[in-house]
Image (cartoon, rainbow, N blue to C red; front, top):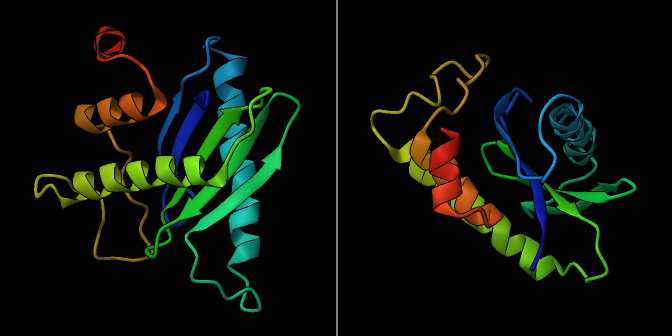
Length: 156
């Protein structure tokens, strides 16, 4: 089983919509580490958006690796970006497993923005989307990351 350290959802302009840490160490510099990883991933997304790099694949694969984690990327057709940090362990990380996680994140995001009471997107394409504050979305991310529901409900 993959050990998910962080899940980030970034808006079409690179603004963070959701970022949650699932590492055993939390707070301060550790949480800042995942913001740094998500912002660093934006450079790789922009590189893939160049006119010469035409691709229809949403899954971008491993974007970069640090000493103890690897960062993977996925971009929707509306340019919303999902960033996943996975712990580097002795186990082999298969693309199929990572794609399955990204599909689950994408489905949870679709369910979130399909809610008529959610004001996630605006009609103005130049405006930033509001951060995701939905408890249901957070619980879905917790379930994807492998956190138990009881642990997730005590954090709220």
